[in-house]
Length: 138
Image (cartoon, helix red, strand yellow):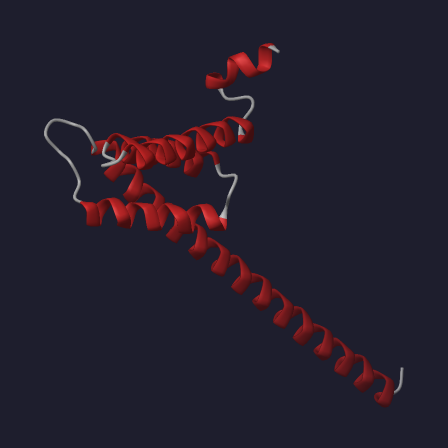
């Protein structure tokens, strides 16, 4: 092999190495970005799930500001993953509590309807879950 051919092979190898390195870095960046997004969503979900789990325990009644914050966070989570069974189950509980604390019958009816929609959506999103035995029987 001549020096010119050897130099072309080395140049080609260097370009290939550079391309593979850049592609690997882009994939790594995408994976880190996705991981951070999922981690952030999980933290937000855990925070509002914990908050809702305390509603009605003992004498604890969250103020309206807390209820609205939980609702906004829940809407953001559902917008990112509308069929996530955990988010839908939390939405069911959230809307049921909102119905319980509603000041008008109309608001109570609306919250109960939203709670039922979330419950049915959660059941559809995880048909093998033990709570769905009646769905599997049919």
